Length: 608
Ligand code: TEU
Ligand code: CA
Image (cartoon, rainbow, N blue to C red):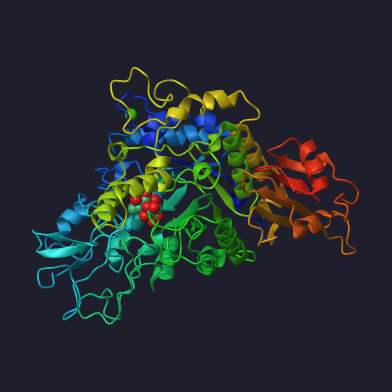
């Protein structure tokens, strides 16, 4: 078999630079701050750090609106600081992946400013369309186009200078680039090569599955001009799932293959991960199949989106069955070829211990944080740890709108309350549950005033409030506690590096219908090991997680695989030393197996 790529047993740590470590007291995290924390990351054992954008930007969407791809925004530092970070990271064996945001630029980018002149060579670098009867573009005779932006309002913005509308799926300060234009693509590839030649080790590619729009044979967008393509439904708040005119369009594979040829061919040791809203697990297999030379892996969203066309703000309460169904689909799709990322947290998602765990008491928070971490890290794929997740950081539960900073949260608050979709109280509850700001409060290093993110005497307060529970949840406290969530993540990451079953074993669900317990088995068919007459043996791990704060019964298929006999005793006896990792003492796990019972949030991997 071909050797597995280096990233198939690597762990990636996502840093949100704005909230990670401030070193000059301006209340914003910065590059020297990241460099100062590299020993902490090396000690945790991660292999790669992914930085959310640090390029020059007006910061309308916290850096996902880029005005110069080849310069660092002064709030984060300079290109020299970036070179220093790369050198110091590489000296510790850490790779550095940048966030590539090329579905759109900032409206303050020189390309967009030039494009506002119809006679400029950049005129066709964005999606400009004439007004229709003084409103958003649309098909003659039909209603004006009603596409909504993810961040509220219309996806079309009128520019008085050009006298036309431009498309922006995100904020009006994030105009979509026109990837149909080969000059746009060439400019992006030139920039990517410039960063890789500077020593960057790859890219996380922001909404890269939105770059090919579903244009018709004449290149016209659905529902616009003389388009022959139906615009499709629009979500209740224009948000819902990716707008139908642009997820996974007809030239998606062509563009990714061209990018691979122009940028990555001939290079090695890099990582590419595409953020892929609107992509099915089956399409993930095609895009990540190494023979297609597109991307190494993707972030799929079906397990963290409400699904069914629901809006994240008004979706039904979460069920474990949805998580099981989505993760099983993601795992099965790439069991023979292709690969998958593994994530529950990032800068756009609420803190998973508050979302799917139990942060109501310290005991439940620690148990459930470890249980959910074990669940994720025991799957097949490349795990991503988001800053603070390794501490079991929780949502911040701001209780007034003026504490929020995220334009998505603020815009949608106004849009949904003014439209009568949600009352202000209901919207505040929704923000406490799922606002992106829950993931963006200062990293909690210690129990000082601003959690060590910035000095207590700093001239400026942090740009966003510090979670009051920094006194209880912080790095300093957990570094000296071998039962901490931090120590547990260190063990999980070490298993990814040292245990071939964890890194490469096949994945199969157990007891899918059980509403409380998530269980599966990992199987590695090793050539020339033990057993079979053909010298092929196999090693198996059973992973069992009680995803609830109540005790649970060991489900039947799991019992069978564990070899429990009718009396519940494991044939040959349940031995504590077969417990590879658990959030309870191994002896208790062995005893619980004997009685077929699981304590609240009990989670373990058991070697057969
Ligand atoms: O996010 C893409 C995306 O789909 C987001 O709209 C996200 O799914 C949603 O906000 C979840 O509630 C990427 C970046 O990760 C995000 O931070 C940016 O705001 C967005 O693209 C635009 O660049
Ligand atoms: Ca700073």
